[in-house]
Length: 374
Ligand SMILES: Cc1ncc(COP(=O)(O)O)c(C=O)c1O
Figure (cartoon, rainbow, N blue to C red):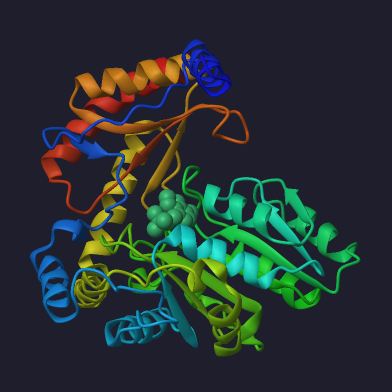
């Protein structure tokens, strides 16, 4: 047996004994999905599908090269202009995923002379981005504005980048963006806000929570987002001042050395944006489902579509998830070590496409099972 085989077997045994083995399960359409991120149901919207087909016919199914070689297509430029207009940001740069957008933005903006101040609960893509960047990283407690202030005030680096999510992917709560933006102005820092779980769900017409931040120096705010959640498609974007975008085109390795966003994904995202602008009632619907589910679980209404329901132990969380599955409800289950605060929780998402009867069924079942794990 090779050293690698022995090591793989040991790793697997440790995962199994800790109850932490991950398995790929094919999605069953018979279940009520309270775990996915297709918040507005646009992944299967006929107009969005048509947008993908049109783009495939016009441009092919792949971009064929990095955008800096021959993979930059008119549809990328159109999508970027529309995303920038929708979110009221000066310029945009599309990446092949939201993960790439975060890797590209943070690594390109944080050199060895930049302090990165990161919230403890940011998404793995931002954690990896901080690890890859050349700057020193300070991790601060979740939504701890004072800790951010102290980190910025006592730094020796000339530049600083504060990294947060506007709505946290697992906790479902909102960042204090106005306070953080004010701190960044006071301490000459840049604020990077990942709007992955806010675009399409929160802010005016689903334009996100950074939409309302109006800074005198627009380069202070860098927004990242994904087209793979509420927009139902695939791809990432950085929305920022044009000087920042120009810097990313020249230095973001996750952009330079990656094949351009696939045209059908770009076409789908364009159609999704159009649908979102034309049907703001989708945003109202997902938020009203989220409020109903929150009440059933006995938690505060969330900032977007993600509900975090704390459960007493990892075992109880798994039990609750499995009982809900028996009732036809698929929910997410997060346990240490993938939750930095070590609190096991169910992650429940609201989706506009859920029928009222499905939400009513979920609201009947959730209170008992959640209270058993509370
Ligand atoms: C907060 C956050 N940022 C970024 C990403 C990555 O986006 P994508 O799935 O488009 O790579 C995710 C996806 O789960 C996320 O939750």
